[in-house]
View 1 (cartoon, rainbow, N blue to C red):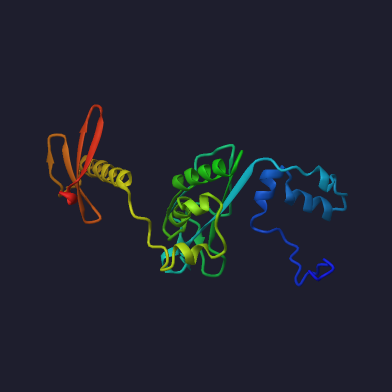
View 2 (cartoon, rainbow, N blue to C red):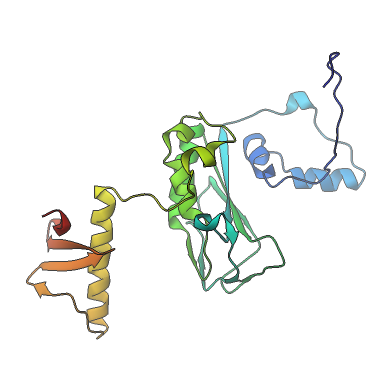
Length: 239
């Protein structure tokens, strides 16, 4: 833009951007449909003043890449692929299914995850829930990194810049440390996995005393005590 506020394009990109679902979610306008209609010679059926914005939308690109290795693409086959539970405010754009190959010859995107909410907080909360429901096996993916971003207070408050990654991940993404609640859930999951192995006739080295079970997760020892009312998890590494 010059001093007279005249602006000039250095480059024109006439295709739809990857983020176009955001516009569609908050306006209710199918941009692909409009492109096809215009290309077929139909006039645009609405004016700019007709376009209204409703709510907030967020999108995350689910990629077969390794955030711990500078986002190096991860190639291979999707041995397991399960998308989040269908929801009226969750949209998933994808071209893969279980068994599909993530090739070195193409962009390693697995899917685009889009959510809508009445405000930013609601859209991001639903995005986090949807990320947690994905099941992807066979390739490394960036869902953990996405959830780490959503837990960042500056991001949640909308106070961030294009320097977000070097600011908050200066040495790369190594995974978020587990809090007490996370450790309890991991220990409980390990306990139930142990029972699954036992029920399938697979020997398990962990010992069992009545309803007290001992499990080791990430070189840390936990005691899981279960009863009819629930469970308690004790981190023995702190004793």
